[in-house]
Amino acid sequence: MKVKVLNKEGKETGRELELAADIFGIEPNDHVVWLAVRQYQAAQRQGTHKTKERWEISRSTKKAFRQKGTGGARRGDMKSPLVRGGGRTFGPQPHSYDFKLNKKVKALARKSALTYKAKDNNIIVVEDFNIETPKTKEFAGILSNLNLNGVKSTIVFNEVSNGLNKSAKNIPTVNLVQATSLNIFDIMNAKKLVLSENAVKAITTSLSNN
Image (cartoon, one colour):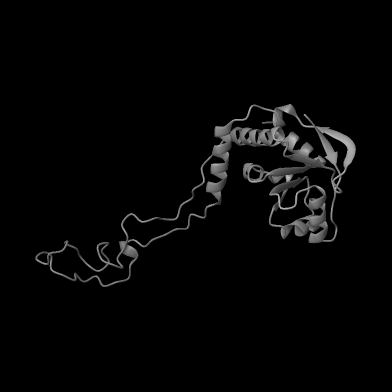
């Protein structure tokens, strides 16, 4: 599959880039894509939820009521889970939600996601450019030239300079990432995928070995 290469003014450069069929043109695997997105989102969870158990409550250890004859349930001190303010039985404890996915499964998921973007004509290839001095207005102008105003986009460069990073940071619809850090969520969570020429080469090299 060939894609026309645009410049930052949004005009055709007269060149075309061949997208590797074994990466951008495979038979997509929906289940693997779902698994990879789920694994990514699970890994983002802090898992710091915590409730106090009986031994962590600071209260009197005196038995407040007699064992029987009160009409209520039998219990001991005020740390009992039966009392308001007492410890919680089997409450949540800190733990990781992350789970393991094989490297080849993750690679297949990214290939499937890239294939979907290519089939839907949602991949834009631009020649490499840089912004030396951080200017949001200049980056917004480039988005306008590419007809991406208000469009949720993931923009991938082989190397993200400080100027580019700061220029894109204040635009809510843009996610600027480096090719080596591109993950399944970055691809699926955007309407358009904008790739620089060197980013296409880096992605192809990275995924062709998996």
